[in-house]
Length: 129
Image (tube, rainbow, N blue to C red; front, side, top):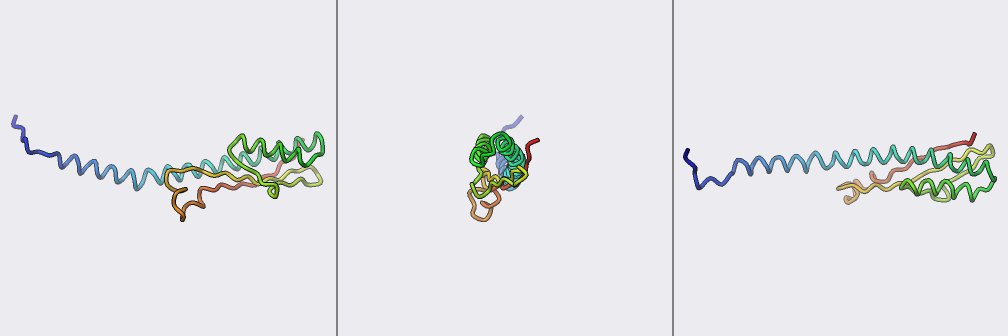
């Protein structure tokens, strides 16, 4: 077997370069898109459960501030926030909340044009039974 001592492995380097390009151009944006999608679904679940937590507290003591604090506590425990303007209690005890969740991604949150995609917002209502 003859081994060429001048072989620099150009074929392998070219192949590795192509694989790296595919990872950069396809895999990373795909990962970010999946992360954003999961965050949006999670924000929806968090909004629903925070609304129910607020409604349960409202049913027990009829105090809007305590109901808001209960909803916020649930949201914060699950990586989201609720602004005071995004919380309401209807006369029948139905609580409506809008939660906000920021997603940290590999690329999307670093680029101005895609940064808005990383802000998940969900609104839900819940009533204690």
